[in-house]
Length: 355
Ligand SMILES: Nc1nc2c(ncn2[C@@H]2O[C@H](COP(=O)(O)OP(=O)(O)OP(=O)(O)O)[C@@H](O)[C@H]2O)c(=O)[nH]1
Ligand SMILES: [Mg+2]
Ligand SMILES: [Zn+2]
Image (cartoon, rainbow, N blue to C red; front, side):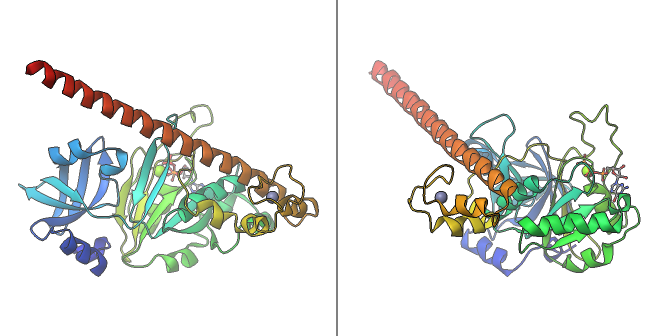
């Protein structure tokens, strides 16, 4: 195995030189389990931990390694290593941590393409697709929609579903496949290029691991049918995992996601809802909320049917969520700052007492 097989390239080599990491070995994090990482290098796979320095200087979850990361490490024995530094990330797929406002959870890093996997059964939901798109567009990840379980529906229903996506989502490739019959596989395989990293995102039970196993020709990930009764909180895949396919493509499997809370989206919403943003240019008021203002060109397009109502409502919901997230981040930082001040004052006080 060469580093190039894991996606290493000249850009990364330059980063390594710029960051004075010539003396270390380089590897890629292929799985993570509670602050223990498996890192793959040219020599093999290493169980890895981070240096104390890296841990103590970490300010948030983003400062810890994640699946997909390139790291500088020192290897010991045949299977243990210490991670010294994380190379700057090219892209970061993240979401709002479930149940913790203002906290970011990294799903994977250094991703080129995200496969947004949805089954054409009850799982199918365009609002959720727009949510995933927003996550992709807020970082440098190209989205690809993958519809699974097409063996369960007729050709006509399949065409209708694709048409309904086209109505709302532009410029995103759509692949419809069946993991049962492997219908649609040929087309999908063509886009999985050597040296590029693909990350699968989607709910539990849509067939992500089945797809990975089929593409790799091996049973790497466990797959299972999920009974309706026990489906609550049960996920077959429990951790992220990076796998190199025979054709050279690099694929990351993920546990199914129930909630996809969007985080800071620099251009996420703008790109996903570009139609609304371009309409908004013509609104009478610069700070128009597009909900009840006169002279709102978004509302006008909604009334005359040019703008899809569900898409508009989904946009408003995510926009609210984004503001909420930003204010909770602000609150959190403020609290951390106050806490930092308190510690500082405390230290001052104790040093005063000493003398
Ligand atoms: N009929 C049909 N069943 C499928 C298809 N793809 C997957 N399945 C079945 O759906 C079930 C779930 O598949 P998995 O691959 O484990 O789903 P997953 O997305 O990895 O689920 P998590 O790991 O929980 O996120 C299994 O029983 C699969 O056999 C498909 O295209 N058609
Ligand atoms: Mg799985
Ligand atoms: Zn408006």
